[in-house]
Every structure is written in C-alpha cells, then in structure tokens.
Image 1 (cartoon, helix red, strand yellow):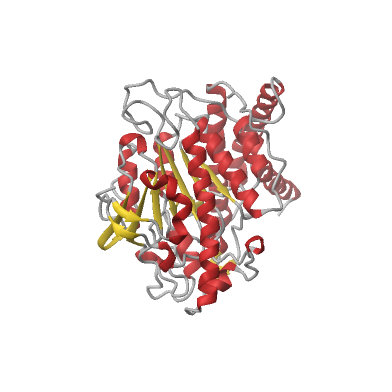
Image 2: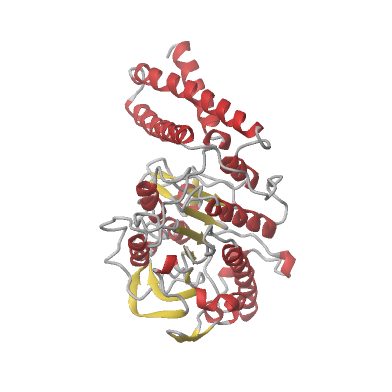
Length: 453
C-alpha cells in the first residue's frame, strides 16, 4: 500500500470529521406555504404542520401511569399530573406494541431492541459489528418527502453522547441503543447533544451581519472539499478492497447528502436569529440540558427551520441517577424492581421528572404563536413514548404513549384511547404520516393506520 494511498485515506478520515461540524449545515429559512394550499407538511389552512418524537428510557411505573377511565371521560394518573392543564390537548394511547422488540429467539438485548424498534417497527439484526440493520424510521419517511420545503429535512437531538460502534447490550451494537432515527436500514442518523451546536446549526455563528459572511465562507469551503472528494473517489476505489469500497460508498452517500444541504443553503436566504441567546454548551444539570434541547426544538419549529424532529432524552438502559429529587440509585438499576415498593416509588418519581419536561415543552409550543395567532401546539403532532412498559419484565407491549397537539385540526385530543387488542405502534405512525400528507404503503410491521386518533 503506497504512501499516496495512505495520505488519501488519512485525508478522508479528517474530512469526515470536518463534515460533521454543525456550521457546515447552516442553512436558511423557508416561508410557509400560502394559506389555503394543502400539500405534504402543511395543515388544511396552509400552516406548517410539525411532527415531534420524544423518547424516554427504561419504561415506566405502569400502575402510576395508566389513566383512569376511557374516551373523553378519563382522569390523569399520578405520573401525568403535570399535564393537567393540557388534558384537552393530549390523548393517551394504551395497547400499542412493538412485536420486534421481543426476543423472538434472539435472547437478551431488550434495551437495544427497544430503541431500535421504537420509530422503525423493524427487526434489528443482532450484531455488534458494522453489519447493522434495522429499518427506516417514521421521521425519515416524512423528511424524505418534505425535503426542500425547509432548511433542514429533520432535526435529531439527544442528551447523550453518540456511540455508533462496539457492543452495548447482549451482543447488539451501540448504534441500536444510541439512535432512534434511521435514514435507511443500515444508516442511523446521529443526534446532536450540544445545544450550542444545535443553535449554531440553525442560525449560524456570530451575531447580526457577521453570520451572513460566516455561512458564505463555510459553504465555499464545503463546496471545495466536496469537489475534491468526489473527483478523487473513483481513483481511490480502484485501490480498495471490496469491504473498503462498500465503506467508501456509504461515506460518499453522506457527502452527497451534505452537497444537497449546501444547495439548500444557496437557495434560501439566511434566517433571522431569534432573541433567544445561544447556549454556552452542555450544562452540568441534566434537567437544564433537557430543557435547552426542548427550547432548540421549539425554535426550529417556530422559524420553520424543520417540520420533523426527534429527541432521545436518554438512551435505553441509561443508569443516570436523579439525586436532585433524592433518587441516588441508577434508573436502569431501579427499573429491575422485582415489584419492590420502594424501587417502584422511585421509578414513579423519575417518570414524573420526565413528565415535567414534557409539560414544559407543551407549554412552549402553546405559548409560541404563528403569524395568524394559532399556537405551535395547535399545528403540531407530538409523540412521547418509551420502548418498554414494565422494564422489570422487559415488556414491549402496552407501551406508554402520549400523542399531544391538534395537528392543525386533523387530530381529536382530549381522551384516553384504550385499544381493545394489541396493535403495532407503527399503525399510529401510519396515521400521523397520512395526516401530514406523506405517502407510505407500510412502515415496519404496520398493518394499517390507527383509527380513533
């Protein structure tokens, strides 16, 4: 293997790092569709229609979760009390299941399967190697068809660092456990965990007019780098083995995706930065971190930077403690409670913390108005869920699911939708895609659109 080949491989590795910098994706605002025009990603009245997917780990204390009563005649249980002011803006859905989350002969690894299936409904291949395989996630199905209407087709957030390699759960790759968004069956979409980088990605670096020049220089550097990479790819492939050729193909797929984003940057004007100050970075407090990311998601929707977003508040199997509320044991450790009343009570307290965050997000959406006076909450569909119900049993049925928002009038919230028999959770996603005007014949193990939402 010659020195020129090695230097080129080294350059590609360094380029891959550079291509991941958020400033390279500083794109621009697109105006909402004219009122009265109905198409994918807008409401019947022409407002932007948003889809947000929020994931929390390790299931819930089921007894404290499940609402009392059904239909519109229901009352929130202890965990959901923070949602009391939003009771007419949410619908709790009971009875959804992820069949491919169960072992089905694959043994352990329920936490990896929980996050891998939650938005895909697909069976993840049990591997700790690079041959990962799951399925495209609902957010990316929507993002593909909405691409070009906003500066970003989708936004992926997390409060955990990203791990894409190695074994994390009983022989399953870490890629399954640290990602919930999948662009294809073999390509997870890595989320961003630094709120400052999210802000800079949305609105650019610097202040005022300085941001314009920064974005232009960034795009120019990117175009130059992309030209070099694409020109050199054919030469490189002649010197690579079959496996490396496949890896290079996957890499160049990401390069082409970035090229499309640069074209978007040149197509639209730079967005106006909000009054919200740029975060300084990742805060020490986990609760503050969560809320900063929720703020970033709200800003992305408010400025119509994207209409599709996912947020993994923590990876499944997370053993974070919540000492600020007196819970010093790890969440994952507590989730294997073996029906111990004390551990169940602590799980309930953790569930309540996450519900407080969800209520905060709904309040932000409700208090943020569109140009016509409607709120973001009226024009959004927000799914809050976990990939397990009772984590002590690693149960993938009767999943904890809340659907919030009015979907621009396409949803009928204010009820507890208790299903008579288990149905695939992907049926809910098929229903939401339909309300967004997104065409999809099937998603994962779906059997049709969920009725009654």
